Amino acid sequence: MMNEHAVGIDVSKKKLDICVASGDKIKTKVLRNTPAGHAELDDWLKQRGLPLTTPIVLEGTGPYSEAVAIVLADANWAVSVVNPARITGFAQSELSRNKTDKVDAKLIARFAQRAKLELWEPPSIAVRELRALVDRLQALMDMRQQELNRLEALGQGTPSSVQNMVKEHVDWLNVQIKRLQSDIDDHIDGNPELKHDADLMQSIPGIGRRASAQFLAYIGDVRRFKSAKALAAFVGVTPRQKQSGTSVKGRTVISRAGHRAARKSLYMPGLVAKRYNPVIVAMSKRLEQKGMRPKAIVGASMRRLVHMIYGVIKSGTPFQADIPLAGLEVQEGI
Image 1 (cartoon, helix red, strand yellow):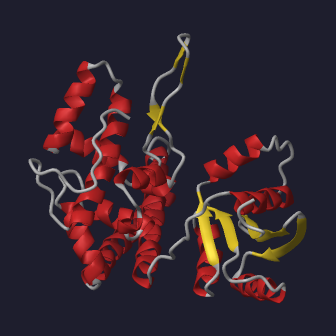
Image 2 (tube, one colour; image 1 turned 30 degrees about the vertical axis):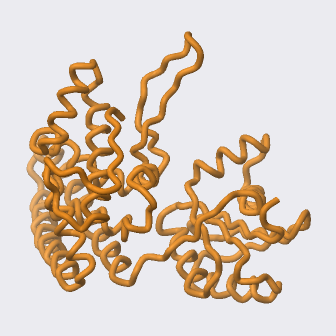
């Protein structure tokens, strides 16, 4: 056991299930997943006399976990936000059969006692604002697509006044989307660090303004990762092989055990890079000749883009196809 004291938190939309483990003894509590609940959690942990170095572990579940993680990190607690796949693997090793929020909190606390953890760094204020803007833009674009689909369906039937209502809503959404895109550009331009990293990313063929804004919003400063491979694992574009002996030889696929939103932001850039990024074009042709499926080649393209992003930002050098970038591990395939 590496840590005598540890805290595991199972996060859901409305509540936090907390487990404090001290040796073999545990103490549990349930709080609301609200700003008031986060403040109460901080007070409760301090009342228990836990040192600030006590590891507090949460699964990375997007906005539901990040809000409480930020509060705890700002209060100087030793917070670690881990990939849910690590907790799943630990549960399997423990032969855990039950799954409830309370059981999961206890499991995470035991994991925190034994695992080697890295401290989580909360995103800067500028990155938090960028993420809020990017999330809002995506919500409006999803809403517009829903309305366009509805408009197409209405066009198949008898003309109705509802069609004009939907058209007006689409027009309003177009204006709001254009305004929000401008706000995102202004926000990045007004923050030198974001502007610097965005410019480096956009030097890579296949990465445009929207993709760079999304990636920076979800990942923040990529320099916090020790290697391009670590960044690729966090995003969830590393290879997952299935092979055992001579009889089991499954296809190699991307793991998808990572940040879903960041991975999604790279899908279209991956498609574009297959056609216009000279390094990825050459790689794609080699993989195609080896018989790799088109969808798998897109995954390989996304992974190579992650390595390139890490390379240009880590080195501070814009993309050049004929210059190897620092920290860029070369491995073809998914």
